[in-house]
Image (cartoon, rainbow, N blue to C red; front, side, top):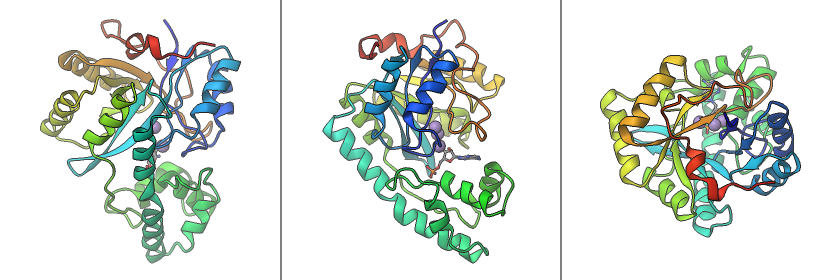
Length: 283
Ligand code: AMP
Ligand code: MN
Ligand code: MN
Ligand code: MN
């Protein structure tokens, strides 16, 4: 099987490695087709594509867009788009725009819980000043000794109802899909198993996504259990969606799934990369 890894992050969003270092690690792990999917950003795409070419890997452009759907944050991965498309670039810039204010509010919440100067602390971990995320706060709280790992920080401080959590309105599903498909790309629902939807809400997400021109779903991802591979393989077939595979790698120590190491897609599914053949940059 082609070893495709179509979901991961660099220091252009909340990963810790440069796009070049992610490319090198992907290749070393046997990846044949790669996409760097930084959150709400395409700033690393030219570097990623050049690095992929240098290592003899196929490359698809990528980004993971933050969307609000029924009061929850849903991630939509765009693949194979034109990274210079004006409406995509503008839409992503607008989506990133609220992060600064949100980060200041998160820091205020953390200060009330006895953790001072978290904004300044998080900034030390930020690779792209435009993209401060909860992950950067998590790394700071570990460094400052409040928690022993980033998962604990999320559990105790950064998820709904916790002191550093701030309600935020991201892009609409409709806008995210317009930006991706308008730029010639394919939209994929990222890690559906991670959301807290009821079965009816999840059905609404898939139905609306499909109606808006969405074409794919991540089935095999670092965020899914084996049982979820099977569940979302069924959902892909039920909704006539293409299937994607991606580690969601962020950092060698933090991420439990390394680049290119996931099991293959279940055989009955249609891989999203077969529909994106014409969009693959070949070395
Ligand atoms: P943000 O876009 O600022 O809300 O940050 C979301 C990012 O936080 C995700 O893309 C993950 O990288 C990370 N994240 C979310 N939940 C957790 C968790 N429970 N443990 C570790 N990292 C998490
Ligand atoms: Mn992330
Ligand atoms: Mn995600
Ligand atoms: Mn991700």
